[in-house]
Image (tube, rainbow, N blue to C red; front, side):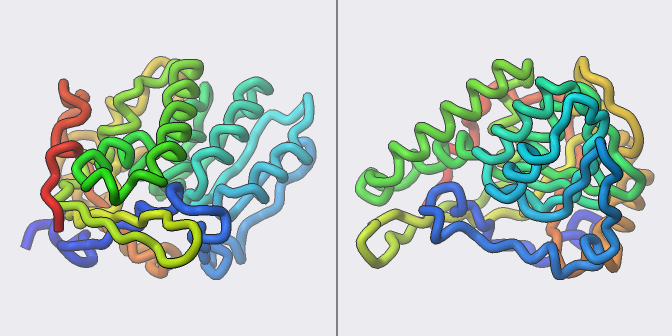
Length: 281
């Protein structure tokens, strides 16, 4: 059994890619507050900030209420959440020139829209920063589905995808980041189901080898300042050992992370490959 096989909780994992597509009432409820991570999370000393929890309206409200002209640092622990809230918060933090310090875990929307655009990011030791789907990649995936399955959903997803691309352009982040993590998760197939009720919104998901992907260090450095820890260096023996240690941290075990990692340090020349051509499950 290879190390990468060992790290996957199950080879075929249903990826919860549906959150951004649904209404507020149908958004997923994360349970990170039940983890030891948040139980032992130290509050910030003013004027600095610290937050442990999902990226949602409460997170955005916290940023708006606590960000001051003399705030220098913001410590974040998050399993991700809503891209719109992450983008809005990231814009405020970037404008204020705040250093973002990531502790223990930063997944999905946290990785895409807080970590990547941060002009000065610090990753604390033994922290997982891992990427997942975006509205842009989901929009591409939906092209493999029958049009009637996503008709009511596509306009909303188009709006979110445009917001992501505009934000990355303004933040000088390569738009390939909106697609590459999904491709690196080794997608197998896609399926859709229309929700019951008045909304008629479709839910669709994917079967993939992994739920998250940790890129090599060379991909995430870019032109900004990145300090601290990163588990993937390109040395296979080192990387296997580091990711196994991360994935089996007792504080993170309740998340049941299925993590792929490494690979080429360059983006695929066709960002849509394996996204628009996926078979139906």
